[in-house]
Image (tube, rainbow, N blue to C red; front, side, top):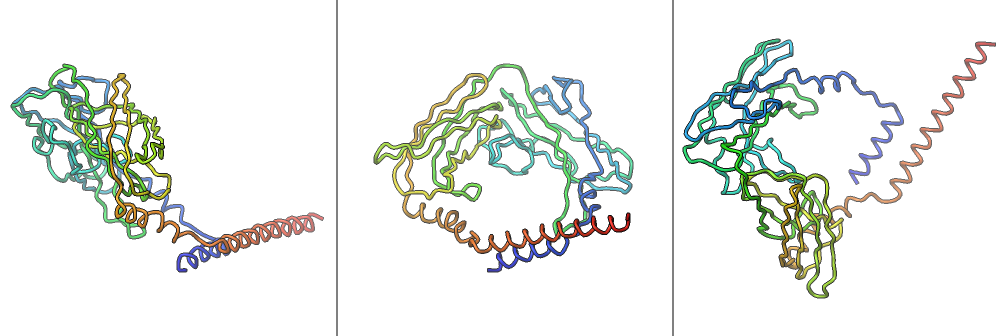
Length: 341
């Protein structure tokens, strides 16, 4: 009922005239700083704006990032070096500080890079952030991928939410151009809540130190009791997976309730290099799991649905708003005609 009252109040506010501050939007878009990599001599691809470094075992190296404060006040920035991971949408990301990684990773960037936690930059000035890379003595094949994240710290608040603006520069470390044999593993298949929807999640693992892009996911979920296909899978939106990372591939159940029973997942994952991995995995949805997940998703959605009469009232109010606007326009035109006569 509170939700209905709130929605009707919003409509009434629209009818009475809603005024907003344009300068708030302008301020939100004013970041006031930028960063750029100072590329060293061991940069592999000098046409790139990120760090693409050829490193050697048991060596140390300093790299720098220019932090340009374009604002009129001194600013402070937080610094993090994050390992690349695969986010819930199926893309390589660098924003999370402690993302889950596979144990096969050659080393963690946080263990081999030294850098200050914060840096201050005077107004209209540039300071150079220095990071020290201490490459382990044990050599590795493939790549270690991450990002240098610089976040502007501010006490300004809008709607009780602290604004933070970040930039990330990629960091790709390799020791050679030796090819790495790609691989992909299916760890488990379980029912779950994903994106607030009923889903079945296939946990995939990339145990190789190489990123993979342009991934396609095609397959089916089959009920074992009658061998009927209950869900078709076809994801072809240029997805990717980070080196030595895990990815919870969520199979959307299209807001349908999960039904307890035994199933088989048939899944094929392919990349742009014509590699392909075929998985056939049995899994079970228990009555308890189905009930809990359905209650957390579908039942809650149904409870939050607005009754029809609310939409009827909103439609009437909006029609009245349009009617009064037309009357106002006609009245102004009539007044202008009288003045001109």
